[in-house]
Length: 273
Image (tube, rainbow, N blue to C red; front, side, top):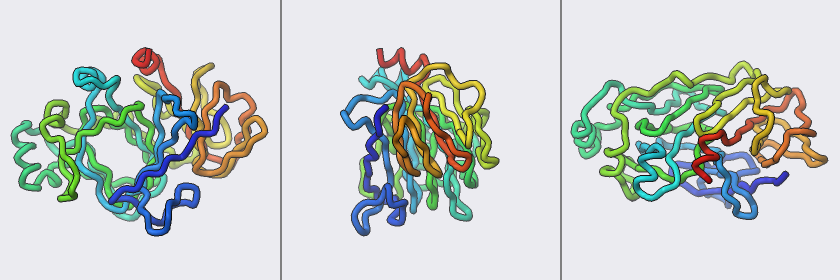
């Protein structure tokens, strides 16, 4: 059992007023808090908090085959759990209607690409599975908990004039110019334990007072305390903290605590071999 390090990243679209566990120096906008192994060991699944005060860039991630073709070990499927959303908050998920790559590229260049995205309203408890290839952008006023393949591979297509590098050519080669596939989306708003994802690259579960039926018997577990506190093998973990463990035995889960569990599945283990 190892307590994971919370690594803070300043972002222009981040928030200043974040929970004290994730707070930086005065006035610093924290956008990402990624959980890393304190010894630097690679984790097969990466979990992050995202804090947004502005829209994030419009972007896309490659799948495994596309990533490996350019020298990366894997692509990036990801899943978001909405922990907080200001009134009117949205996430851009796929396009309103299919288009040709050339049409999309032209819209990027003249700025009208923002209107091509399907901006969906979101609320606390929404769960969104964002498969590789989907054009997307998180909106402002959100706190998201993200589970993803352990890859830092993002092609930024449009960034509202911010002075950051864009990757339009690369993104056009891997993007799917259609609607978001919502078949794996869900909700945890009812505060019931459930499996949120079971592959192909990671599993995830929401736990409120008890573990859901159907968890693997063994896994390389990562545990994030979303609300309340839990004890594991004599140590207490507070909201916003995380650990990795070979076993869930001895994990005391009070009825008022919410946990996210994540673990690699066979496809992720195979890609790391």
